[in-house]
Image 1 (cartoon, rainbow, N blue to C red):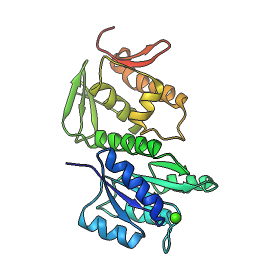
Image 2 (cartoon, rainbow, N blue to C red; image 1 turned 180 degrees about the vertical axis):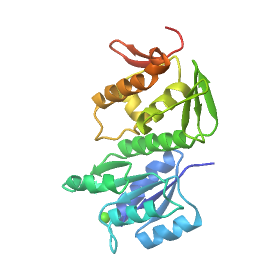
Image 3 (tube, helix red, strand yellow; image 1 turned 60 degrees about the vertical axis):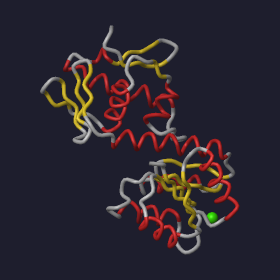
Image 4 (cartoon, rainbow, N blue to C red; image 1 turned 90 degrees about the vertical axis):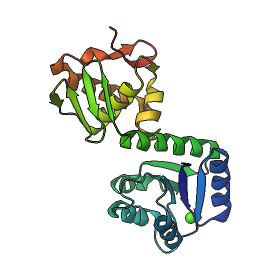
Length: 229
Ligand code: CA
């Protein structure tokens, strides 16, 4: 089914520009000039992602984001916030509200579409069903659990996402930037060295099971998940 993105933005010119770019990328846009219209659109169909303007008439984008997070129906729907320059300082409160990413105006539609795709990929990956087994590890997707043989592994949420990505894309080298894009959804506020931190944690998590060598450093290129040493 075609992915649907709800654009909540009171400036028609920006809304149209974004909708045009999304359509060209094969994504179905839904327009909402205010949060009331957005709520009606959500009642008709829960979108795959919400693009939310920070400054809206009536209710702020941030307030609306909090409401979406509280609602059972929209709790898991990723949100990308559109902010004007100068509002970036408020991003901390946005992160508290569960915003997945930010795009600062004026933005290029190319950049925006890339972010939308990255977040959609990530959220899709998280909800991916089924079990993946490789190199003595088993990921139980629906249960969000990892096992070494029959032994359960306690793993952090980011390490889980990282491992899930690796196990579904084995034997290939990924640069830090590519891992950021796939696992963190290209969040602009995450630095590349964050990847190294979580790779270290992932190895530490796997070490007691003798499986840390599955996560390999490829000098000058990045990281790879491989069952061949
Ligand atoms: Ca606005």
